Image (cartoon, rainbow, N blue to C red; front, side, top):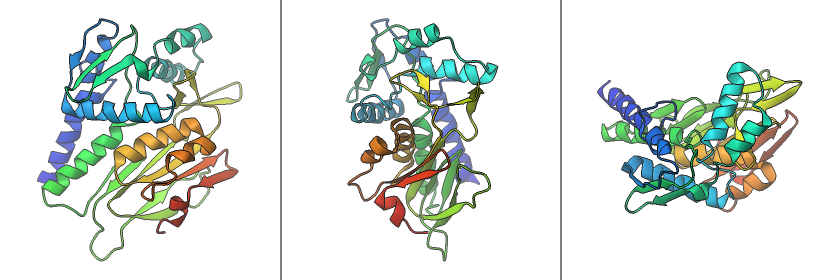
Length: 281
């Protein structure tokens, strides 16, 4: 119980640092300085996550981009009011997006948002970081055989006694499809898709996942699973692959035997990387 409480306490601290919902969070305060010409000293945790985010932004040509907060907020509101954002409003928000607008000094842990109106959103990476941190806390308390789960993302430590791993079910695009199971040990799996969060207008389905390069929500239904050594890698890659699609996205896991990915499209086509295909079931 002490270990679990300590893990939850650690997640609560990280939420106060990285939430874009909390107006007093460190992330929100950094966003509020956008365009002021001021660089802020930031926590080691935020610095670490932003450093990883910028590396993936560069690798994906901006398909993963934590400066897309203004666009993300418009689509979040659209799902709430069940109405598409006006095109001119989307265009205005898009002008505030671009990972080059975030100047990060990872050694000194300072960050500056160079353009006015730029908002940070860590929705595709912070949850994974929090899961890794929670598992690290449990391990410090001597609980190496543990699993931590948070809405679509899971990270596992050592296997339970007498088991080959933690048995994890993967959801499918169609509810009637039987779940597939994987064995997870000292690894993470992340799921990205619009099964539960979407907006439907005039027969078109708009995902909660926004392409930062266009400022528009994805309209092709995709369900992505990523296997990785840790949750921050799985979480961020799942988001990036959702935006890029299978042909470009699976290149992100090619050549690394620790990374596997599967993309299901529109209930008819499934594309898997070799590592995902070979994962213990």
